[in-house]
Structure formats: C-alpha cells, structure tokens
Image 1 (spheres, rainbow, N blue to C red):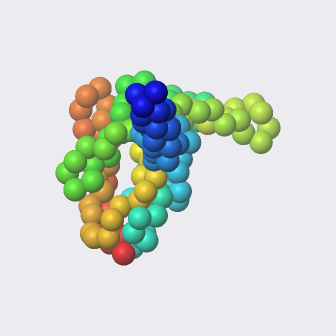
Image 2 (cartoon, one colour; image 1 turned 45 degrees about the vertical axis):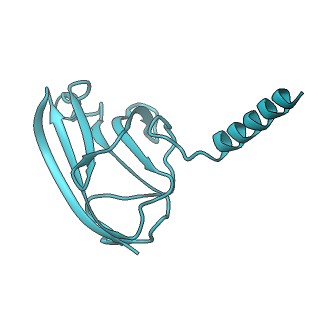
Image 3 (spheres, one colour; image 1 turned 180 degrees about the vertical axis):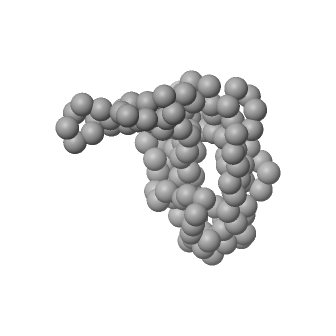
Length: 143
C-alpha cells in the first residue's frame, strides 16, 4: 500500500510539473510581446516575449521576387552567442479581396518566462541555401 501511495504521489507531482511547465520552442503560438530588431532597447525582466522572423511571399505582382526564397532559407536566433530553439511556422493570410495573400515562412522562438535582469544581445541570421543572407542584432537591457 505504501508503494502504491508513493507512486500516486509521484504521479501527482509529475502531473503538476507538466501543467506548470513553460511553453517550449515547439509551440506555434507566440507567447507575450513580439521583439523585433528595431526595438525596444529596454524590456521588463521575466516578462514573456517572442522573436519570429523568416521570409514572406506575396504571390501578387511581385511573385517572382518575393517567393524565390521560400523553402530554401532559414532564420536562426542567438542570445549572447547561444543558438535558441525555434519552430518553423508556415501561414497563409488572404488579402482583403481574397484573390492574393501572403505566405509566411517564419521561425518562432518563445520566451514564456522572459529573460532575467541583465543586458543581452539578440542576433538574427537569415540563410539561403545554407549561406548567410542577412544578419541583424539588437542589445536589450532587461530590468
């Protein structure tokens, strides 16, 4: 009976930990406020945020130029030089007339618990065919 009660107790604790666990990179729903590479330079510590970047395809008039990168590129996010896990998210948003729309191929990194107080550099690296295409960085003070 003791063993059974111990197993039930362990299962209850594990279940509570699972429910309270933060969102992981495999989540496709953004958590908190978006952070882009043009700001902000300050942000509240321990506050949820996410970074999501990639490539956009507008199949309208600029189809050839806009859509050539889909499926050949990636986006990687580094925080202070450490690669962060991300999830590829592909979405289609129809335009107001339903004729064309926008196809997004982006990589989402959630920070459901934010970052602790301190100053961090976020670096985004876009690649095409395994070669660097563009980079952007921002230094943010979390307080």
